Image (cartoon, rainbow, N blue to C red):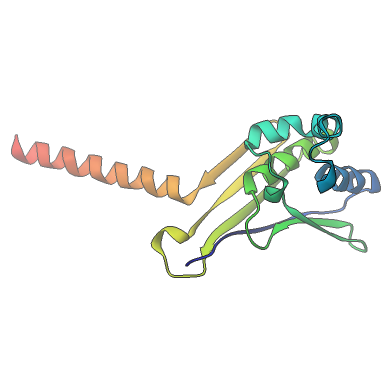
Length: 162
C-alpha cells in the first residue's frame, strides 16, 4: 500500500502582532468536543465561511499547520503530510485583503508518494493577491500540452491524407 502526501511551506514575513494574532486565531482548530455544538460551530465558522467556500473544504484536517518564529516575525503555513494548498491560498488572500491589499504571496507544493507510482507525483503553484487567487496544477498543464500535441498531430495527418 502506498501513502500519498501533499507538502508545502509558505512564509509570511515581517508580521505585526495584530497580523500574527489574526492568522493564528483564524487558523485555530475548533475543539473536537465542540463539533456537535451547532451554536459554537456556527460562530466559529462565520469568519471562515468565504475561505471554506472558495477552497471547497470543511475539514480542519486539510488546514495548514502553523509555526511562528518570534525573533524574525515570520509565520510559516505548511504541510508535512496532506494539508490543502487551495485552502492555504484562500487564507492568505483573506490576510492580504485585511492587512496588505497591495501585496502578493506565492508558493508551490509537491504531491509525493511513498512508492514509485506514476499517479503519485506532481504539484502546483499559487499566485495570491487581495483580489485574486491563481492556482496552477502540473496535471492540468500536462493535460493541456498533450491535447495541443494531439491536435497538431491530427491536423498533420489530415493534411497528409487530403
